[in-house]
Amino acid sequence: MSYWILKSEPSAYSFDDLTRDQATVWDGVRNYQARNNLKLMRIGDLAMIYHSVGPRELVGIAKVEQSAFKDASATVGDWVAVGVKFLRRFKKPVNLASLRSDPRLTGLSLIKQSRLSVCPVSEQEWRVIIELSEQP
DNA sequence: GCCAACGTTGGC
DNA sequence: GCCAACGTTGGC
Image 1: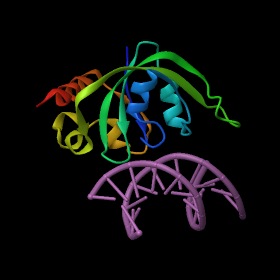
Image 2 (image 1 turned 90 degrees about the horizontal axis):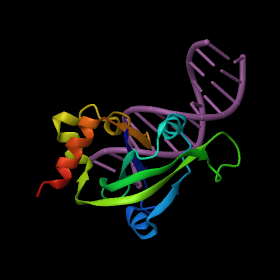
Image 3 (image 1 turned 30 degrees about the vertical axis):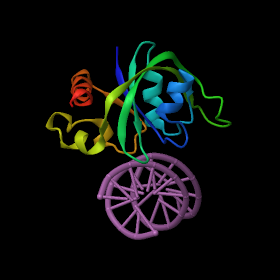
Image 4 (image 1 turned 90 degrees about the vertical axis):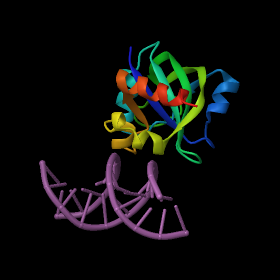
């Protein structure tokens, strides 16, 4: 099983929207590296949702329930979408500053490649972030 | 709102 | 295939 971060602008699709909908098609990705990551997702993988506008923070977790398929919103080009469902909201969102300041997360691709909208996360990094989300 | 960094495009 | 120009994104 693999771990991911999916970035989203809350005005386009927020974690609240996912909470309401329970499941959604994650489409609209138009970056090759991000697309390649989407193609690597398998059913059962977990993905944290990151809000990239407003408070920049990880807000909760979604589960991949449908692996990559053609993105119907793309009229030209070879783009894909995945299906995800709501899993849970973090007790406390983990903001960008705390990700940056944790020495265990210096290799996090979200930080190193800030423009990548679908980022891989290692199991160790995943555990650290979960821990941060549970701190009082 | 500004600026730096990055990704993509186009011309040679 | 390279590089400059351009557009977009991200962070403050």
